Each structure stands twice: as C-alpha cells, then as structure tokens.
Amino acid sequence: MKKRVFSGIKPSGSPQLGNYLGAIRRWAAEQDEYDNVFCIVDLHAITEYVEPAELKQYIREQTGMLIASGIDPDKSILFQQSHVHEHSELAWILNCYIPMGWMQRMTQYKEKVEEQKEQVSVGVFDYPSLMAADILLYDTDIVPVGDDQKQHVELTRDVAQRFNYIYGETFKLPEPVTGEVGARIMGLEDPTRKMSKSEGGSGQSIALLDSENVIRRKIMRATTDSQRDVVFDESRPGIFNLLTIYQTITGESRNDIENRFHGKGYGDFKKALGEVVVETLHQVQKRYAEITADPSYLESILKKGADKATPIAREKLAQVRERIGLG
Ligand code: AQP
Image (tube, protein in one colour):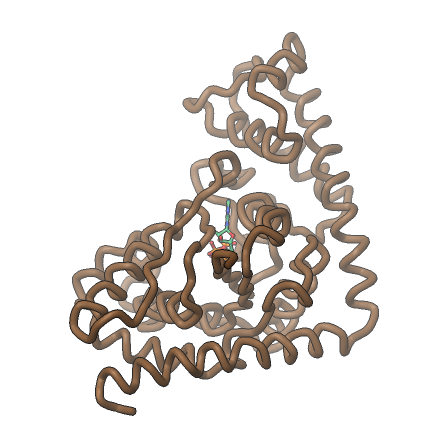
C-alpha cells in the first residue's frame, strides 16, 4: 500500500516561483511513490477578498499549472475543494474540538492580525480547522508543506488526537514533510519576506506565467547588498535567496555554485540565474498553453477529480457523524 499524500494549493493569485520550487515540482517528481490527493483549496482563497472573475481565473491557472508541471490527473486525484461539501462540514465539527488558544497561537493568523487588526476575517482565524478537515478526510499519511504551513499540520495532529481520545480511533495522524532546499523562497525586492502569489504583479514575486523578459528584469532588479562575492551567506538575505533559487533548480552543491561564480560579480550571477529560471519555466509555460487551448478540458478534469474524492470524504464524514451522535 502506498502512503497517501494530501497537498493543497490556494487560488489566491497566479502561482509563483516559490509555489513551484517549494511545492509543485516536488509533488510531481514524487507522484509515483505515493497515492496522491491534490486539492485546489478555493474555500481557503476566499478568507481574503478576491474578485469573483479573478478567483475563477486563478482556479484555472492553478489546475493548469499543476498538470503542466507534471501532475497526472489519471494517476492522482486532482479536484476543487468546494466541489466536495464534506470539507466544510468536517471543518465545522472540528471547530468544536479546537480550543481558541490553539488557533490564537498560529503564526500566520498573528501576522494577518498585525496587518489587518480587527478587520481580519473569521475565515482567516478558522483557516487551520478547514485545513485539518482537508487532510483528515482522506486518511492522509504525509502533508508536504513549506515551513510556513508546518504549524497548521501540527494543529491537525493535535485535533485528530483529541478526537480519537474522546471517540476512539477515527483519524489517521498526518506527518508534515518539508524539503530542505527551497522550502522557503523569499521575495526579490524584500528578501526578508517570503515570495507569495498575492504580490505576483510586483517585483517581489516571479509568476509562473511571467514572460521571459519580465523574469529576467525582475531578477536583474532583485535586491542584493553592497558586497561583491557570490557566496551563500545567510547574513546577506538577498544574494542568499537568489543562490538558493539557483541551487534548488540546478541541484548543484553550494561549493560548486560558489566556485562557478568565483571572481564574478552579482550582475553576472543574476544573468545566469535569469537564464536558469527562464529555461525551467519555459517548458511549463509551453505545456500550460497546450492544456488551456481547450477551455473545457480543465473543467472536465476537476469534475472527474471530485467524483473520485467525494466517496472517500463521504465515508470518513459518515464515520465522524456516527461517532459524535449525529449519524
Ligand atoms: N515562497 C515560498 N517558498 C516555498 N514554498 C512556498 N509555498 C508558498 N510560497 C512559498 C508553498 O506552496 C504550496 C502552496 O501554497 P498555498 O497556495 O497553499 O499557500 P501560501 O503558502 O499562502 O502561498 P502564497 O503564494 O504565499 O499565497 P498567498 O499570497 O495567497 O498567501 C504550499 O506547500 C506552500 O508552503
């Protein structure tokens, strides 16, 4: 029996290089090793306002990009979260077993509160409960996450344990797994903040659909420092991040990369990095254009995915309802 992996991606913007290097590329590479469930988590995307037309477009982009990056919808389950209503229902049930204090400790929530104060939505607060439902519905063994999401998987384990303790063995406890290199790609303008979709239009993020020239320009303008040596030095976050991107894509060792650019300046390195990124994304973009040429193709993939996910989710939810006396 292969281990089951649940991976979610939020259609809150156009997918960006951090999503690709930290997550999607690895999901595709490890696809045959596991029994995979890939979910376009649209209910998570609406925790912050997104224009309806844009949301639809982002759902298409995420789905298309997963397939263009090598996810095979015949081998794996690939579906849209809101098409399987059991996610919302289990999230509500889990809410009733999660103490407020656990949720208040979530770093992502605390960061949003810093930015948005009392305007932060209840959905943002409750995000980890919905994420726990996503994972637990499918008896997930492994959740591959960037290190920013690890805390949410820990909370998932905690609530599963609490439920199992009260009602008997119901949920499998998932393990979070983070890749070592590329687990956190930082922004190009401000390398102290992570690259994210919501900043796709700026120089901070490289969108997977950016043109070759835009990619090169964003990299050439990336923030570095006043030094010259192209070395992995964590105290210089700009160049360190660019080198990490280079290392993640090429798979070369830190030593080899430093030797290659020894005696050269940041300009030469950035040019080389631009080419490496363009080359990688070119293949994905080409495939994406082919997939999206037929407007109904992605819809049919998501429909088939929901048809595969629903019976699994329905069975688990029925068991939960039975256990708590709602069945
Ligand atoms: N900068 C990043 N470096 C490495 N991995 C990243 N991931 C996201 N950003 C980086 C990983 O991509 C997967 C899908 O992420 P998500 O869409 O579910 O949520 P997110 O982490 O909130 O992504 P964004 O791009 O930062 O979106 P916004 O701007 O909407 O918040 C996850 O495995 C994530 O760790």
